[in-house]
Image (cartoon, rainbow, N blue to C red):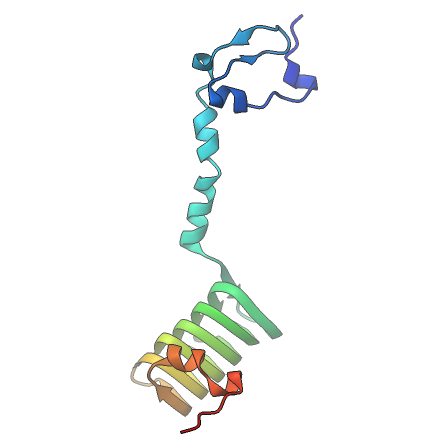
Length: 180
């Protein structure tokens, strides 16, 4: 009766086979050459890279569904926030979408924002802010580019321009003052 050695014991490391040195089979004591290495050695080494590629494409996404209220949080490391309920938070993200039923209250620094519902608070959009016909944005708003559909509302302290530069050298955050 032949029992394979890895059934009850540790398996031999595959490193000697990869290096081209003969590896011995512990049960039989027979040495095998580098030419008889299993063909699955190379795909195993490449396998850990494959699962990470789709993760980068999809990114991290947080959906706050209808009738859900998310209050008093700081949202970080989120690529996409989809608001269908009510969110009261502080966040820094790549993309924010607020549906018609959705509402966001708080502070947000976003690359792209698409507003169908309501936003109230401090909104900094580094690239493009889109306010759809049903959208309403109120508060302190900074943006790179803006698109407002007919019917969309924007009220408050609004400023366009180089948002990225203003964000990096903001005197409010750094505590610096400019002396001429």
